[in-house]
Each structure stands twice: as structure tokens, then as C-alpha cells.
Length: 124
Image 1: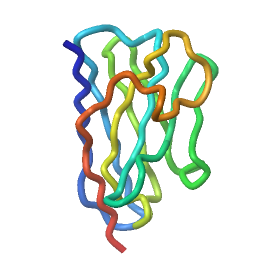
Image 2 (image 1 turned 60 degrees about the vertical axis):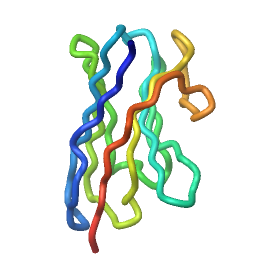
Image 3 (image 1 turned 45 degrees about the vertical axis):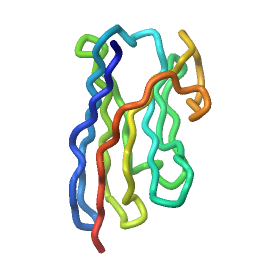
Image 4 (image 1 turned 30 degrees about the vertical axis):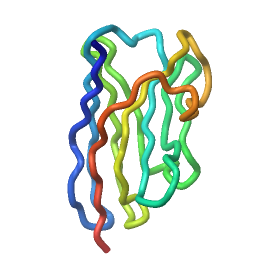
């Protein structure tokens, strides 16, 4: 059974940093794009970052502040978040592409597996 378990969320002041982790179990995802999404109540889940065969992709509002990375030996995905802003407050989800060897940005409609989410709250 596939499981994605996020951790690392919490409450931080504006300008601070957090590192999210996502540990995948049940199978190996080295050949799949992985990514982070976020959602606030009343809004749709939105793309944050993807790491795939062709590189990394970020939504414009986090470019230069967030960095996505992965350790395939540990089946773990990371999101380093710096210079956090109150508008980054959301429930952050780890995601794995449903397609093997996909190149490019991961869209929510193409996600095969989701984590349960970890809350990030940035105070002003």
C-alpha cells in the first residue's frame, strides 16, 4: 500500500524558514515526478513546485524563496521554504505523478498519490 507522509509544517513568523519532508513507502518513486501543492479553505489546491526528469518548476510567487529536492535512496521529497510570507499559509500536500518518466510541471489532475498534508502558518 502506497503512503506519503509529510512532516515539518508549523507556525513561523514572516521572514522565517521551514523545511517540509515527504516520505514515500509502499513502492519506489525514483522514476516519477513529484511535487508540492497547497490549499487554503475555500480555494482550489494549487501547484507550488515540481521536480521531474527535466528539472524543477515553481509557481511564480515562490521562485527564489522555495527549493524542491529529493533523495531517491530515502524515497523522500523535500521543500525548503525561506523568506516565508503570510500568504504562504496553507495546508501543504506532497504528490506523486501517475505517469512514469513524465517531464515537466505536475498538475493536480495528473497526481496519482497524495499525502495527508501538513499545515504551514506564517504570522505577520
